[in-house]
Image (tube, rainbow, N blue to C red):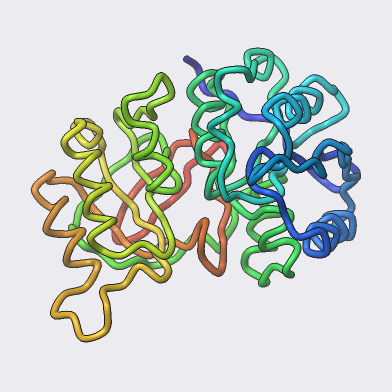
Length: 301
């Protein structure tokens, strides 16, 4: 399927808020909307995003309806998730994203949104964006790097914030399509009709508050499932609060190296996207390169 990238989103454009996962704090949500408006965007808030059903932001029909209406509205240039948590996977069987290939829009989120971002990319070829959310970084007041990188990437421009040295666990260079997101969500897709594809890619993996043995378990699931067989390189996030317990004689990085070095591909560690500060926006589906300890996005942005 050919890659497609949505038009840049700039001040004055209309963006929609979507809530495919967990309910959110209204005060942080309102602050996030105000932040977007202060950048010059016109923010559409569908009343359905305020619905509540157990631990999700409304029923499947309500959540899918919000997304479908935003996708169908030609004035909407981008969809920005409120927050992650859990629930995006409910939407996949009923969500029709086929028309997005003809009228691409930028879809932004992370954490539980990994499910939706990869679903859209694989079904339509439209580049999606792993980055900050309304009732997350934006609502809490994004740091300068997060904000600058988000606005540049939203506008289809290269962002200097992404040019940073990473820890090299296994040296080497690679190039390919950038895919990935939150490790636990990618592992959960295994064995389903929505299992993520990693062929000929640079795979970005990140997570938060997972013990090293749990990271080990998820990576073993992917290894045994053959997901790394055609991966060209792996870039890990900062893996916040995933360190080995105090007093341990090993580091998380040691676990990752022992498991994955036999693949014979470059492995870098520490790119801040997702559960991190800063939370830099990565275009999933874009071309990327690993070289000299850096992840470089070659576009489109």
